[in-house]
Amino acid sequence: MPEPVTPVTFPPAFLWGAATSAYQIEGAVREDGRTPSIWDTFSHTPGKTAGGETGDIAVEHYHRYRDDVALMAELGLTAYRFSISWSRVQPTGRGPAVQRGLDFYRNLVDELLAHGIKPAVTLYHWDLPQELEDAGGWPERDTALRFAEYAQIVGDALGDRVEQWITLNEPWCSAFLGYGSGVHAPGRTDPAASLRAAHHLNLAHGLGTSALRATMPARNSVAVSLNSSVVRPLSQDPADLAAARRIDDLANGVFHGPMLHGAYPETLLTATSSVTDWSYVLDGDLAAINQPLDALGLNYYTPTLVSAAAASADGPRADGHGASSFSPWPGADDVAFHQTPGERTEMGWTIDPTGLHDLIMRYSGEAPGLPLYVTENGAAYDDKPDPDGRVHDPERIAYLHGHLSAVRQAIADGADVRGYYLWSLMDNFEWAYGYGKRFGAVYVDYATQARTPKSSALWYRQAARTGTLPPVTAVE
Ligand code: FCB
Image (cartoon, rainbow, N blue to C red; front, side):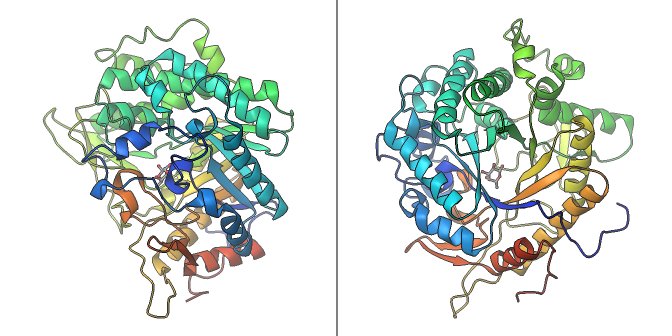
């Protein structure tokens, strides 16, 4: 990277946000007409989550949202990204909406606006209504059509007061962890189904974008949040470069190809031809997916390091969210995954801010002129309160300082990054890992639901208030 920018000061309009998702925080899973999503079913299936933990109660945000918004305001946040639980607003995944479900989100949005916090709504953060999975789930085309209807319902209800919209969160995880390695709901392990799911998620994004535009004021912004991977080859050996290319197609090109350029990469179609014939990509689909967007969301945690390997090699899978003997990389059994050297977080993810810089610069080129947001970035640590009740997390401060500096550097290098959403506002249900991995800037005592801002939250508040990163030692 070029010379670092110092002091690390951001443009005045830069958004200082935090992110969450519905199933990870809301609880209240059987209230006000909500029906099970695939995550309710999955987490209640023995052996699927650490300790059999579920989102039944989570951090009770459904009932505590007013206090949570007050806390966000105290922490100086200027933006908040949250997701809508599909089965709370449209329980069967089709047909009429439930007003009480919509009211919850309307009240939440009004509370945010009253505190001067910009809401950013994600329509889909992995919690498909179970009824739609029973009808075939994402491998089936109809799920994309249902998503467009759902997008229209939510757009109608909130489009007058929410300007920032995100169709899907990390469709890679939905497709390849949900239907490939099976470590996420619905827990299927079928490589062909995972590619079908990827296509129908793309279609859902395109149809959902059109549905939002048809119902919302033109000033609103529509985006998607991709967990685009920074895929690095272990060496410059042509075989390793080819392996990196394969994984890049499966991690990135499979989504940004149709979304941003209107085509799947030829290299992806060839490399997966023994797994699927792609016959479910119908005439008109690519045009439907390739909708003009107003922004692009990038979620980043750690880079992916790969090499060519013998077919039998059994390196660690770079799926990030849990171990499985089934691969989330269809047609790439001859690629080996390696741990990037360096310090790691509690997830075992290597800390490497240069990856975030590289990712932003890549997408600046991939989507010229499109404003970018870092819609997730953060770290899990084994945080514990001191005897005096305070929670010190200097590692998280260092992580945030490093990654925000990388964002600032990317802006200096010409990238149009408009905001940053820290993952996560508060500790929550970390999917297959249950409550064991704490990503929050705010500590949650799960026995009492008491919220305590960690040192990192106070550090972040200072950054948000001044627009300049404080030194890492500022709030020790
Ligand atoms: C992302 C997810 C988010 C959380 C973080 C740690 O992949 O979008 O819900 O699990 O990872």
